[in-house]
Image: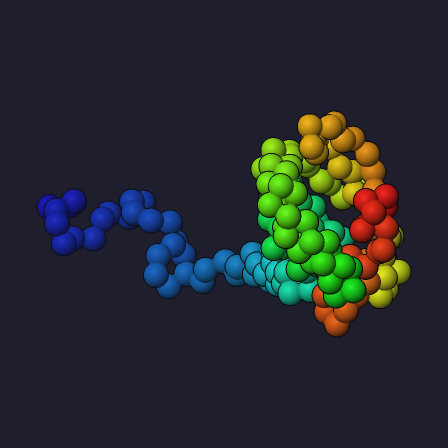
Length: 173
């Protein structure tokens, strides 16, 4: 009986000739492999660039951005750590003197608490081991509105960038 289980189908039925296990498969292209290699290379290059900026801090611009964030967030220990030793020692002396008088210390603490400023990096002119960085400062300091640009000289000290401009001490920048 034709068509029963285990019997061969009559001629003209079944799969076309060359179809089945023995037929050669069409050759696959290498397009997917090539695209994968290109994408992998781009990821490695991008990761290398990102690692460079993370490890080097992004040069003068990266340091300036960190400083601006520290000022905006009132992270005094961070922005003080980014000053050149000569400038930092003068700032420390001035703060020590101000804090030695209880009334002055109270006023200074109030100014720090109530001041609200935002610092942003406006321009960086990187000259290798030194840079001129312009910040835009906006907000209030001691109940006075502030909206101005200040430009300071930064210098590379080893692998770190530090604010080294004497005008920082007078706030004139």
